[in-house]
Image 1: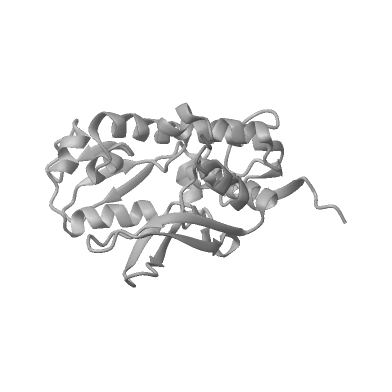
Image 2: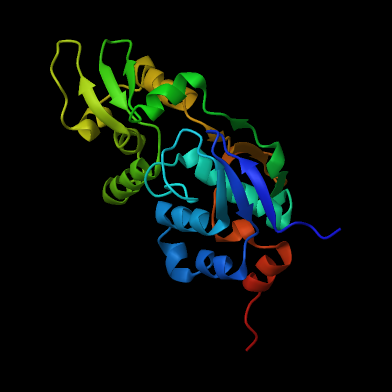
Length: 262
């Protein structure tokens, strides 16, 4: 039986629909050198628009027509899930990628493989669904009494994060501050500069509590895994990220890396 070129999937939020296999025209976009130098959420939006054919259940989103609002309202967890499902539909579940040992005494580069279907996926809980559908507004009171209003990472929020990361760097204070839209201290005074506030926070339970709440209520594929260097045995945490090689076959990857004959 010929494998199907389409599949119906159910995203972590409940958004359901039909996706297709990756085409060569999609690979041309993903392996474009200019795009590779400037990765960002806009590439994810474009790929999801190409891969998504029709919608059977809107999940928590409100939109007209067959195409979800990838660039504005769709959660990052749904976007990566869609991309990963298309990758498995096209190439299968097995995925290998390059890792460099982070031990200063080793720095060996090695290949690591995994079964993408075995990565844990968290669904959008009922607790998170209601505030998400009510404007994506979440409220957390930190142990010191500070009230923080924040949002789950939709397309709009991800674009904001990407903008500030490019401007200020990929620091924890920047990434989390970009998701915040309200801060009020226990004395009632409001904080206007979220970035300065988080940069000056002690790395204690106060900040950890907020990060835990943001993580607990989010949905999507758990892409953090632990790998072990075959040379020195050191273990390290890496992220199974989405990039140009994500859709390439092993033979195509090796051919692309082969030096050009002179």
